[in-house]
Length: 388
Ligand SMILES: [Zn+2]
Ligand SMILES: [Zn+2]
Image (cartoon, rainbow, N blue to C red; front, side):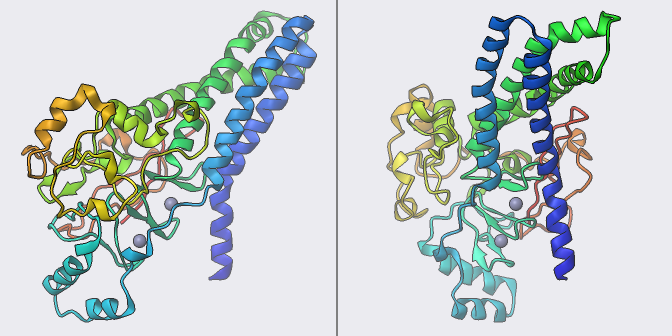
C-alpha cells in the first residue's frame, strides 16, 4: 500500500511539474532567446524586460500560493464525539440517524441540507459538513467551500485558495498576452524570413504559439470563474444548486455583484490584486440572501439558522437592496426553486478521470458528475472536482 501511495503522490505532482517547466522554459525563451539574443535595440530590450518581470513575479507568486497554501480545516465542533459517533453508527435506521444529526447540528450554523432534507454528514471524516463544504477524495477530507480539486496545482480550490486561483488565472492571461504581443513581430519575421532558423528562432516561434494557445484556454476558464465570483457560486454549486430548508436555490449565497466579489477578494481594494488572504468570513458560515448581514461572517453563533432574520443588508449592496429586502421576509428562499442541473455534455470528458459527485440522500446512484479539465494543448477548461 505504501508504494502505491508514493506512486500516486508522484503522479499527482506531474501536472504541477509540467506547468512549472513550461513557465521556466517560457522565462528562458523570452528573456534569453528573445530579449537578450534576438532584440538588438537596447532601449526596447530594457523596456521589454522591465515590463516582463513584475508580471512574471506575480504569476509565480500566485502559482506558489495556490499550490502550497494549507487548506482551512473543518472546525472541531463539526466532528462527532466518540459517544455520538457510537450512537450514530448503532442507530437502527436512517430516521434515527437523521434525528441524531439534527440534535447535534442544533448549535451549529448549518443551513444547507441533503436532497432528503437531512443534515449533511460525511461518513469518511465523521463530521457534519459545514455549508458549502464537500469531501474531496483526493485530499481525503472535507474542504470548506470546495470549488474543485485542481490537478494542475495538486490542491483544492476552496475557501482559502479561491482568490489565489482566480488571480493565478488572471496573471497567467496577462503574461500570455504580454509575451504574445511582444513576440509577434519576431514570430512574423522568422516565419516569413528565409534567413537562418537556428534553435533560438524556434524558441521564439514556439513561445508565440504556446502563449496564444494558453491565452485562449485561460480566457474561457477565467471568464467562467469571474462569472462564478460575481454570482457567488462554487463550481460544484453551478452544477448542483445548494439545498436549503426551502429547497434548492442556486442563488442562495448571492449577495449582489459587489458583495459577492468582496466576499472573496476582501473589503480593502489595495489587496485585491495580491495573493494575500483577504476573503471575508471563516469558511464555515456564509451570508445568504435570507440572512445577508455581514455580521454573519466570522461568528458561528451569530448564524444559528434558527435565529430570526432581522438583519440588515450590507452597505455595499445598494444596487441590490430591493432583492435583499424582498428576501428578508421571515422565510427561507424566495419561493422559487430551481431544478437540479445535470452536467452539460460539453463539460464531459475534458479530463480523463470522471469522479462521482453525490450527496447523501440521493435516491439513486445517478449523482452528478463534476469533471472538467484544463488541457494546455486543447482549449479545454478544466477542473477536476470530486466529492461525495
Ligand atoms: Zn469528509
Ligand atoms: Zn482536493
